[in-house]
Length: 170
Image (cartoon, rainbow, N blue to C red; front, side, top):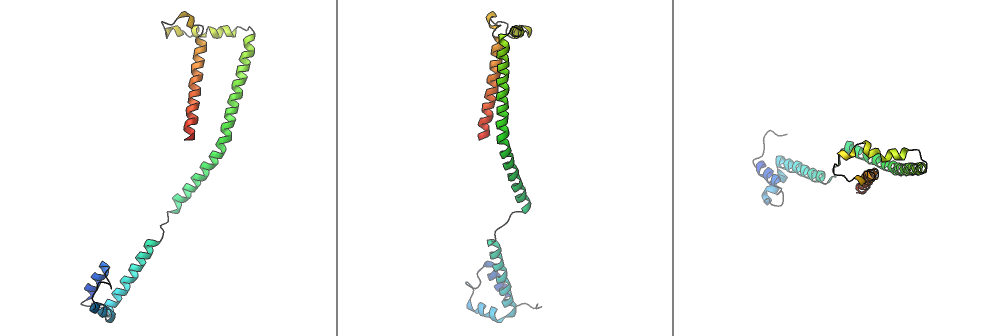
């Protein structure tokens, strides 16, 4: 390191800072930088820093390994859940179908026998006082109400299942 600088050092530094060295500088200044030790070192160091900056700009920026690992684990876990979900859904649908078939079979077999429980089921709307909900309800509708309510409930259930499966595919 020199204690005394060169008189033309600021001029060389300004050209280097503007990126005009050596193309836009006068020939005498280039000759001076070749002869002067201070200006020559300034040109050499600035050139090395500019090359390093250009090389650093071309290097690909890598993400932090933590979030990258976390996303890979999340993707692996979601794939495993998807593989498990398909057979479980099939088993649930199968179990529901079998349960409904057994219940329908049981009700059909018991409907032929006269145990009196069907008459109780027909009297259920009157026992629950549904006429209070519909005061202007026709009297002929009382005996068929036990059919309307389960049909509406089944319709609501089936529409919910359809909406679930439609949203699942999106």
